[in-house]
Length: 617
View 1 (cartoon, rainbow, N blue to C red):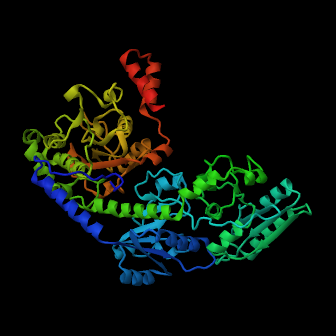
View 2: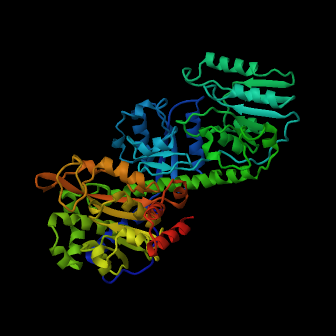
View 3: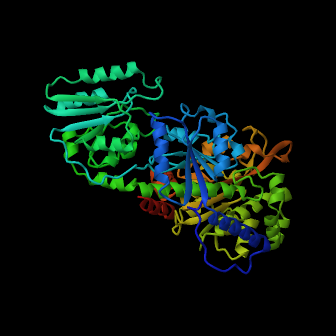
């Protein structure tokens, strides 16, 4: 749960709220006010380097996000932990953002960063969807990446926007001779020789300007490699009217922009590298104000949507240069420095708030965790609320299992305290003391249970009045382990949630259990960490756990006929609308519609499925 999922709530306390609920809200409001009054201090840490793209990126990031003053940013370059510790003691930051790359800051991996006692963020320079999904943030609290094409479904990662270092003001007149520019380190796969060959093929008279700087680390770009690329470029030109100019300066930002703005068009013909992140060269090209051309390398995947095409596989360099430039203007506006600065600072403040939300839970262990005796003690106020509002129902329960309902109630109230007029769905509400307590406190809840209204979640899903994407909160306590098709169950929960909505579940858990382990007759399965992450969460790609799971850190302190098991909280949220649109989601109604056709279903059920089909088109 982050500020993007929480909204302000008007007014008065509910008359029926118990003391435990009021105490919970007072503590939240006190901590929230304290955070708002205190200016957040941030520290960007980079390595000491001059001719290095990673070093340049860190300086540019500081220059941009400092434009927004919701965080007081500082910048430092460090070679070891002792230098960092000295600066951190002096500045006393709330958050440290590391411009980290294994080649430039190898000392970070073994550094005792937790001694700093602040929120730790690390930049993720090389990332793909697969890497993002399985990445572990250690030694940081979060990893930040700048790839708008990645679905942020890993709770340990944050997606931040790409940014421009400047926007064009006054472009110089275009050169009289058509001039094609490019720049970058002469590392393999950049396609500088291919660009020279393409210009040689498409023009009789043109100038090619390449800037191939040397690197701080000779192992990355050796003199021999630089010479080999230079020779290859020269060999690609056979026409006397094509001039090639190669320089080796390491430009600062202003010099890069001036260099690119002096060309008719800039071009970057990278080879395909599926396991690489997005290249920043196009950001500089976009900032300079001139048109630019690319290859359909995945390193430019953030620009695949531009139309008309700017890719050499589709159009010639001359056509791209002479084409409609409005798409470049829109892309520049989306990545403008002030806009990007505000978004970066908002994301980082949300990260801080997210960590605080986890630390504010009664046992300070977050939400996705084992509910063992530590939780039973910490959630005592919520247990007392259950006893106050649903005493008869609670008396029929197994005492040690009541921690699940207490966890569900407490987590729901933390979310609902700042959610006006919430829509709540309880999937499996029979004898649910958390649902009964919420209802007694005045919350209206749509309840789904065979023992309450004869409906399963699937029945409700295909009902004529079902409204997908409309619920702020879905509560399902001690239900999932009893249903036959648990993957379909969580997929339907995900589809009922609105963007930013929260699902609060508990499950029976056995980290070291075996598939053939004896279980109670009504229990279909016990869950394990890998089972939840790789089977359940993978099936709802438009949802993400609210925090890093800690299920394996708990104690399975219950037993059934000799088999140890425990209870676990499972809390996830629906992604924001933009991220949902990126996620490859196969809605349940498509699956049910297909099954219905195969089984020749007729009547109301088929009609309901067809309505869902029209809803999802």
